[in-house]
Image 1 (cartoon, rainbow, N blue to C red):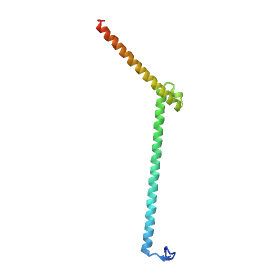
Image 2 (spheres, rainbow, N blue to C red; image 1 turned 180 degrees about the vertical axis):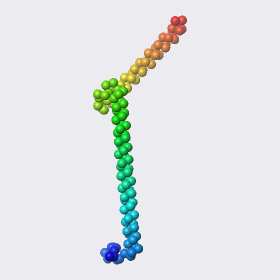
Image 3 (tube, rainbow, N blue to C red; image 1 turned 30 degrees about the vertical axis):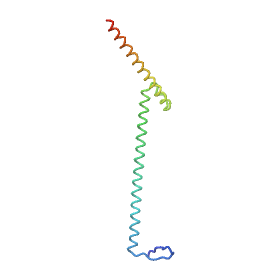
Amino acid sequence: MEETLATPDATRRSLSPSCSATVKSRAAGFERRTKRRLSETNASVREDREEAEEEEDEVKEKIEALQRIIPGGAALGVDALFEETAGYILSLQCQIKTIKVLTSFLQRIDQEDMKFGG
């Protein structure tokens, strides 16, 4: 069976055997490239899915760590846990400031005692 090629003026002409082979070769090449691209895309999707799962696991681990660190954190949901964490951090910062002030005060008293021979 002879293959034909449509021309702009709607007439048909026969393809030579070498031209027909070229068309088939190009079509096969296109199919190979398409399959390769699909394969690469599927691999990329799998990698993205694996990365997302790893990130999700990391987030879960960090939330569990927060629940262990924050007093009463194990009984809290994520939103409440974050709010409680913020409050806990502020509380710790206040404690640090208090300790610094007390340390400074005690150092001054100690220095004054030394001045007066105490």
